Image (tube, rainbow, N blue to C red; front, side):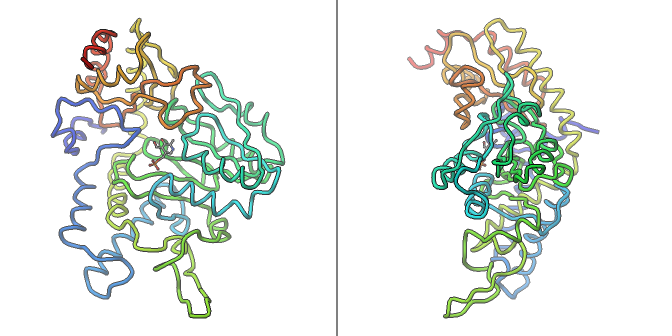
Length: 406
Ligand SMILES: Cc1ncc(COP(=O)(O)O)c(C=O)c1O
């Protein structure tokens, strides 16, 4: 039984800021006690490096750290040898693009993506396209930034080598049809790379079912700490890649003749002391989310989304850009007021939303406006908090926003 009141007690940020309405979880989420305790345990009882020490605390720590790979694998329906620890979504996507470029991209090849991508999903490919004289091509998007299979099929051909697409846009919130897109991409022998930054925290993501080749995400948007993330890759593809980084822990042996034997499996990609406590924190976050159930989380978030959109649409002074969003990411603006000024005013009323282009700087061409307000909720939010936002928006005027700065 999904009980938001009970859930809210698990989050110190909610307990310590009872007046705050936090609608910026798309930027980063709050952390439950269990995650904080797991990280604290490392600092207070179990500080040691992993895979190096021969004493009990080092063993305990290595076990806790290694166990997260299995938790994440089960969470995504993957195998442990398909889960690479990274520093976050951006790290995973950049690392992957750099590892793939020489094998997969030749002059004239096409990298297919969308104009609703976050910078981290496209900028690595922009650089590679310049270097390799490849083409960046865009899937035409619907009026709310959604990908349809018709539009995808219309730009797909045998020159496409990579499809780099977000599963859920961080501005427009639609769930793109990744499973169907992957099937078509594979018919053309293209690789399907999915940015899961805004999907993995909110919906059940089953990589076997999607059949995507790679998927990246960050821990900090799904109740975990910053500085950790995951790159999922199909085993046979990961096995074929040359690591980007070299150093301790990833090698089995090397000698002065520059002969290097890397470890087998995903540890080949994990050189150097990792973000140990962050990965352990990610494991605790996965436990917490799994306990509640991703389907329950998504169902509750859909209720919140329907209510938020319904209430915003009642306001004459508000324009909603994605009323048909599939997740609880809603972009809107107030007629005649600069969004950052509205965000500052909302901030002064203890309501946290984000304003701007949300690191997805091409979205403006789809929705026809440079910057918006984004309310991005999570399953710890409530309808009462939505009422507070809507009540304040109703009363927000240009004069009140200007008064803030005088
Ligand atoms: C869709 C999407 N992709 C990628 C990122 C980058 O994530 P991170 O900054 O955690 O690496 C974000 C962050 O907002 C995002 O929303």
